[in-house]
Length: 474
Image (cartoon, rainbow, N blue to C red; front, side, top):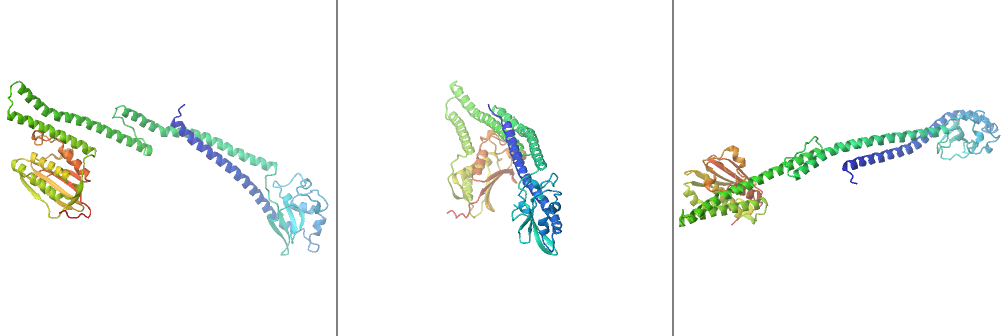
């Protein structure tokens, strides 16, 4: 039979309560027994204090203790055993002899446990088997110690009343323990239900999530660890829902991106097959352009996929990022001229050394420059600059109009995202270049962001950490 965690938790709390109650009961019983005996002995010691002056009155300054030896009955009267019969001589008093105990004595039996010795410690009368280390008090007459009173301590409860009192205390202790255990059982069940109800809700939501209901959420009703678990579950469900939405959008975007060049290729080939269009250099060039578009799209999708997986190969070394930017800008000079754009460089003479893959940085800067070339109006300009800021190399590429609306700037690095109008598919972009740029920058522990440019267009800023104690690159 499977035992639920609710019953396990309740049983654990109950077992702990039973163990605690048993320990308390045993400790209380043991402590009470010792404390009760200590109490009785303290009562006897207090009586010993009060008896010392009375016993001193039995001492004769002329004959000493001889009078007490001759009349032991006076001892019984003094210690509180009035009329107690006994032998004629103290030497015949056996320890615990019943003849010492009348029916009415003190409840602690102190009178029967008191012994008197002379000043030298020689036993005179009373309880003969007292231990020498027992509590004792001096009997003083005229500022002189003439004897000692000893009280044999109790080692166990003796009278019926005392035993009954002790038994009632033990019974009361265990009765309270049983009531406490019963209350603990009820509290354990209530706590188990309180603790496990939200966990059961999380488990139910997890099963819904596994079944495909990505909208399943848990109501977090507390601020403790269980409430934090519910909040973390909701974050997980939200992340899964977002991932699934991204995956669906990605599949739709990829299929849409491939559909356009494939449709053009199919139309071109069908036109040639039907004889509507002849097979010529121009038609082959058109087909080749569409194939090139498909190839670039496939390459971009592949680069983005392996970038997301962190599988892009990187061969890192200390490189001068300013020089790489200069090389890429120089390579784009022809493209700038074709688009009637003016290119400006602002790269410092000092070397900006970063630990990075030179090929990937060239890919990064080429994508950013290509983006500016495609989407900047003719007659505009593109500015590429680099500078040092503390331990960071700051690379900025900005262009002139048209700009990008500020409300869409945060989405600029999403896959297949394009700004309407001037930055559209008609210019030839796949919508993956900026996403690839973000992957390359993040792989180098850097940051990339987009803001409006002072030139009127788009400003892309890349921050890369400078290499520590970098040596100049030749």
